[in-house]
Length: 543
Image (cartoon, rainbow, N blue to C red; front, side, top):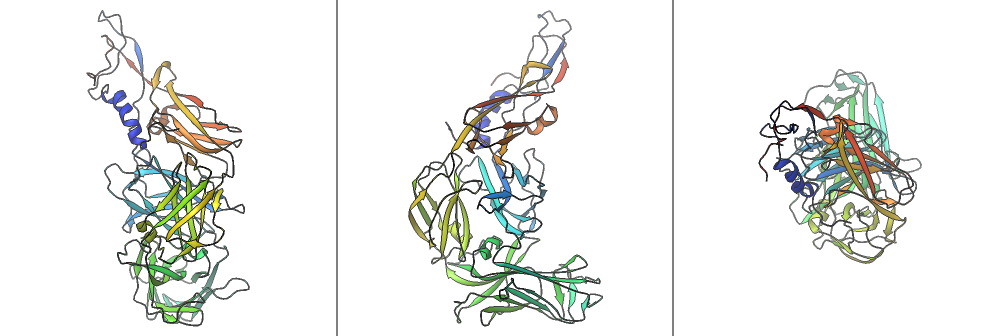
């Protein structure tokens, strides 16, 4: 249990100052052996490496998908790009302070980053992609207003063959230089269903890149991904940020959504001249004939949604428009925003130490929110609901689950998510335990010399699941929370700048885990300094 909850930095600032601030080597004094005080030549003394600077807070991210048991499996080979105001981010760094603008996550599907120490950026956009999944933009909050030890960023991607989605790629060689010589049509229709989206590229269009330069080649590929407007899948794949900069009293609620891309011999086409491309999308059956609709588009390179001036034409269960560029398109209606916020009052089992996640999902919208340990309610403020486009009349299924996706509670039907949900029963689906991990370090060439490992980052996971980051308590120990009793876990310690001096493995295997505490010592290669006499001063004048 936490005796004094602080951020990862705050927890270690005092100890770091006591250990390295008052007794630092900034004056270049090095420890020397005590030769008895006679001023003669000294021997060799082992010097522990300097501890890395303490971290402020960390963002523990993972890319996951839902499995058949409605839990989360990590996605391999995912890529994450960080953007600020449409440009590559300069505010994200790894735990050693190295700038990070993109990450290839490999089989682990997880990452650990933080905000650059001198950055005031409150959020960044993460563009997340993986083979076989719909690329999505996510907004990552870096403000840390709740003073969290670890900010959890769990990116849920949707397979391209998910129910409620359909894709079609029309390939044509009808091109002369950079100009089409015949109509090219792509139509996304699920098996046994009706078209969810179609796009028609007419004859005589000159294909261009984002800078307006002609794109030439021999093979044109037109791709269309359509969404069923009546399902929550539409909002699962909707890139975040549609309402981020909207200061009005309304929110833009998507009624139809599609992604249209075009390439020539693998080179992306972003614009074209000479004519427009017609896009037709499936629309809700109950769409009001008099509803005023607008179009917004997202540039996946910048992660920014922009309003368009395209007029929208309504048909029988469809909406259509003409465009001169290609990307994600959302046809929206304007609805009053929820000004009450969402309050969910819990009954039943207590929220465990590591917290839970609350989600609301429907064709009206989709949002996530963290639930802190021991909470008896979760209040989601109006500003947060607006960010996710939740309107005053939105309804959704509300569900609470753990980091692995195991469900603790779910409403039987959709409920109003602008207001209060009472008596939401929580029931722990597993037996959970917390384990305290104490790590220590010493020099391999002199075990009496301690190595300060208190500013390390500790992570742990079950096989196939997302990596979690351990919280650090006031005693400098690491808390492995919400472990499933009896399961196997792998714990990895990132010693940061000390990693190159580590001897042996930095992993610990926990078989059939229990809540018993664990202490693990690690060994490091330390520098050796030849003394020249003296009384063994460590340099510094005390604190």
